[in-house]
Image 1 (cartoon, rainbow, N blue to C red):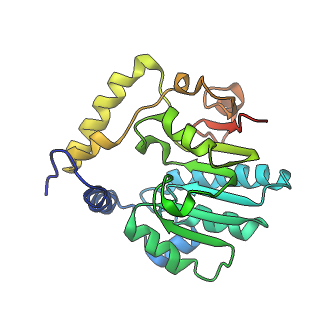
Image 2 (cartoon, one colour):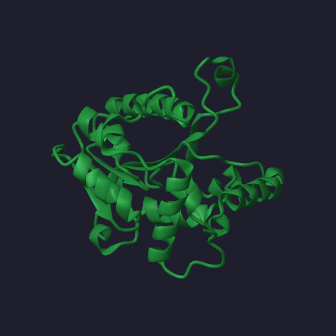
Length: 245
């Protein structure tokens, strides 16, 4: 089946995104979700999960060193594996947020016995989060689905505590001169899968879009340290502090 044209509702996007994830082999069994980011070496996305395993290790170490961080929000949590692992490793209340119904229901089912993690089917501007504040708001492999980087970070910052931080991990950033070619590759990728409409919902951000914010690069994919490492991570890790700090 080929999906073309503009998607009119969040429900249409939800359904299309789920079918795409199925096609890509990114819908996992409950048993597999419970063990992520560890997965069998023959899995087609094994190398992707190796990167995420190291990202998780670095993130947990960072948060543990910030002993005052007690509330965490993950935006675009998917099947909830990272939110759940943060809740198990850290003495903090963790909320996983997503509009993907199937994966969020899976998260609730698989991680129902972890008392300090909660999964919410809503976006960042939803009513249930209207008055909520968090010490960390995390976008892990999700920022590329937001059309305006500046706008979504502004919204996130409004939900930070005074000492709070926004973190962006495991998502590509492009040089301005690279964006046209990247968009074309994205169109070709989704067209080959029969999901042309998804190209309109994948955005190619660059660091200059963050110049309004007080941001810091915690991991640079082009650094010598990363290039010489046997555990290369191709993605930036960016932190943005509350503007009142």
